[in-house]
Length: 186
Image (cartoon, rainbow, N blue to C red; front, side, top):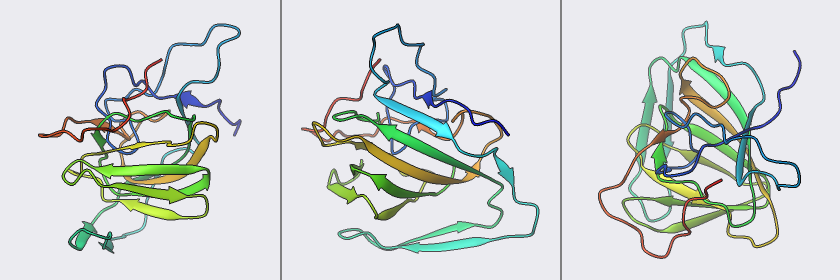
């Protein structure tokens, strides 16, 4: 299978939460010659894979400062694996995902913010975090002025589709978190 070029996230006017997709068609307009890379680019590393065996997944997630959560996927459906490149200072809009996301920082730092508590939780290269998905509204940003952040994310309960479509669902939280970076636009 021939590798596909990264597909940038469509961020203009989108409320992001974690890794931006769903209604996020993940495709910024093509860049003109001489333009830099898109603020956030998503490259799916594999085809979306249907789980053909009978599988159920339960994850107990306890994040510092939050009550434990039990994430249950009686049928995790499809899986998508993507590499997400976040340029220095770039920020996702508020969003959620159709299922849990297991995210490993390959390079740099990413700050994850739940909409309901506004706490900035940084994750560095070599660390993994789990986004609960479903109704969890969040956003993330690269706090660095110089270093690119690279995340390898496994999306459970991914819908059929290509190039990040349907993986991130734009959502606006009821409140706001003052002081967060503005979502990146193209």
